[in-house]
Image 1 (cartoon, one colour):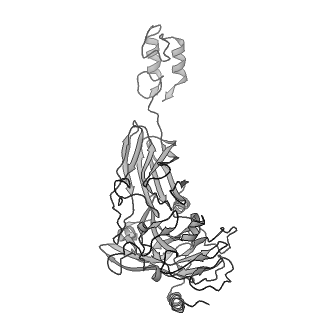
Image 2 (cartoon, rainbow, N blue to C red):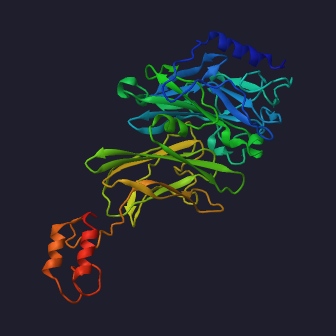
Image 3 (cartoon, rainbow, N blue to C red):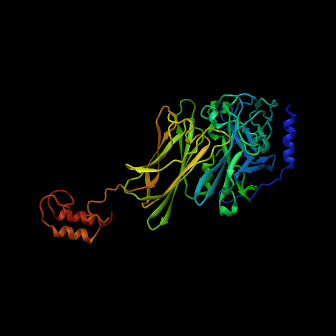
Length: 471
C-alpha cells in the first residue's frame, strides 16, 4: 500500500467518472495484448503499457482552443518489464518524463500533427496489471518495482512542464530544474497542441488518427532498454475535439509502425545512430504509388525515436534527367515557448540528388531539425518507376559520423540513354535500323557506329537488334 493517498484517490475518481470504452478494432489491428512479455530487459525496462486508458476507462481530454489550435492530453500507463526496480524520485532528474504525440493518416500521407511538452512524473504507484507481470513489491513512490505498472491520467499528463530540448534521449539524462517553463493559458500551455482543421471530420474524410506515448526513463536508458519505450493507439475524431477509441494499445511500437500497418505496402527501415554517448534510433518509412500515365508518387517519413544528434537533411539518389513535381513537406509545430524554429525544409534537385535540409546545429541551435520524438515527411511525383537507390541523412549535431547511409525506393534512370538509340528519341526501332543501313560501310567516327570500332557494319546492326524497344 502506498503512502501517496492523494494521488490514489484522484486517479480512482478519474476512473469512476470515465466512460468505459474498448472500441472496435479496424483491419490491421488487434486489441491490446494481456500476456506477459516473453523476455524481460536486464536492469530497469520501462515501457508504455497503455495509452488513452485509466483503469479500463478511455481517457483523452480536450481542454480548449486558441486561434484554432486545440489543447489535449491523454492517459499513459508505464510498466517495468525489467529485472530491476526503476527509479522514480520525484522532483529530481532521476524520474521518467512522459511524451505525448499525435498523428494523422490521410490520402496516403502519415504525418505528425501534434506534440506536447513532457510530463515530469513524480510518484510510482506500482499497480498490478496482467500484461506487466506479477507485482508483489510494496514500494513507496520512489520506485517502480519489476512487474509493476503505474498510471498517469490525462489530468496529470496535461500538466506538462518539461521542455523536450532539455533532454538527451540517447542517455536519458537531463538537468532539473528545467531551463524554461511553458508559456500560455492554462488550457494550452504544454498541452498536446493540434490544429483543429486537421481533426475536423468534414475536412478530413477517411482520415485515421493515432496517439503515441513514450516514457523517457533515465535508468532504463542507461541500461540500454529504451528502444521499446514507445507505443501507439488508434483513435477516432467524432468532431474536431471529441474522440473515441478504435483499437487497443500497440506496445513496443512507435507510430511509424502504425503507417506500416495501415498504409498498404509501406517499408520501414531502422537505423541505429552513432551518438557521442548512449544510443539512438531513427526510422525511415516509404511507399511508392503508381499514378498512371508513367507517373508515380513517392512518399517518405523520417521518425527520430531517440537520437540526441537529430537529423538536418534527407537526401535521395535521383538523376537530374528525371522530372519531379508536386513536392510536399510536413513537420510539427513546437509551442509554449520551446525554442525551436518552424522554418520549412525546401527541396533541391541537382547533381544527381534530391535533398531537403535545415541549418546545422553550429549555424543555429534553434533550427528546425528532426529532433527526438518527432516525425517529418517528404513527398513528390516523378515520371520514372521505382528501383532501389541510395538514401542519406546528415546528423544535426556533430559526433562520430557525419551521416546515416541507407536505401529506399527512388525513381530510377541513369540518364545515359542507350547506344542503340541513334536518333535519341528514347526508342530503338526502325528509324535507328535505317540509320545503320544508310551509312553501311562508313569508316570513321559516326553516330551509326554504335559499337565504336570506327566502321558501320553487321556488329552495329546486332547492337540495334539487341536493344530493340524502349531505352
